[in-house]
Length: 312
Image 1 (tube, rainbow, N blue to C red):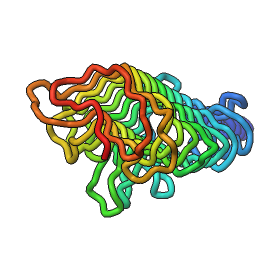
Image 2: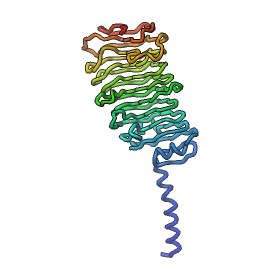
Image 3: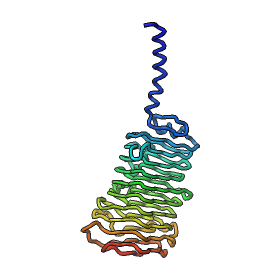
Image 4: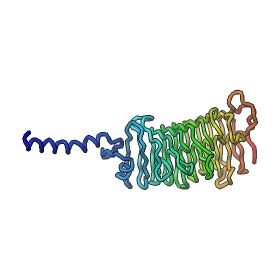
């Protein structure tokens, strides 16, 4: 073959190779159109700016740490993009300490680390919004540090087979929020817990509305909702069923069980449906309160054996 022709073929192949590899890269920064093979590279390319990372269909053994900026992590198709089995900094698939983050349509599974706090998301600072996400088969779904000026909003998301009390550091939970300014959880499902609480929060304000807490297949679980240090806000429109296999079945909702940091006199609990799994007979309390504040408990549909409230 003509040497010139051989050289041209080789140059063409070399030029084509990066383009082909890039086309297979699972992470696309929407604003620039650039593709990346690693999630961390995509996050770093946004830096302190604002950007959206679209995650391709598939299961990815990958993780990233966001230290700045405002980043949206978006599934190309809701429920079809999964982060599995890989935690950054021994913490989570996504470790977030930028200005803000939004999670849309992603699945997180198999997050397990040595201290028992492996999570889909570890939020250390900034605002967080989560929608249409699924957290399953991990030690925790979402775990946060404290940011009293920050807000967290979770909508249309599912938490399945999460939590554990098998580690000396204490229990992990399906959703564990530190001392944040406000937590909102709406239209979401908590199910089949494996220890700890379904929602544990130290936030000053809460809006926990129109969710389902299905503990019928739970194992070694505790409260449905634990407002660990007191909160104001609303818990309304939720459906709750307590299962048989509990570590602590004494209450569905607990307020200020670990000391009162925030006033609870503006906490309203109304319009919820709470009961035991069919065939189970026991005594429990719907709202157990350690704060001493006059919580406003309105009309709720309570099953047999469930006491409306109790001061502790």
